[in-house]
Length: 151
Image (cartoon, rainbow, N blue to C red; front, side, top):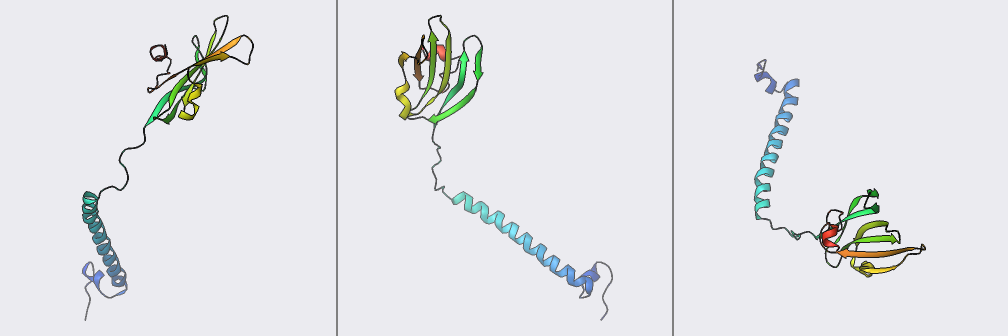
């Protein structure tokens, strides 16, 4: 029995034919696996109910600055901080002296730290006193919104 040369000959049992038949089988198997994953993957995703909650915990977003003045703005550490929404707040701590200078620190406070909110006391540095204010809306301690929320 004679084998045909060319494309038809590549499927023969000759040396070239042994390499082509497994390649064709692998290609067929790969095609079948891709088709099955597309068909069954779509059916499974349509009928599947998620076992995890769809809502993520909500966070309060606050402005954070470690050193700020009204004249110069934030000088050190401008950032955003996040705390769990329930029971937490944004805070601005004012450090003032008798000459009227106001240095501010803005941050987040968790519900465990809420005792820091809305109090006035003397500073460890002579001639200065500290006043803190808390608010409970996103970015309410931001410099542009501070006068509205922290008055």
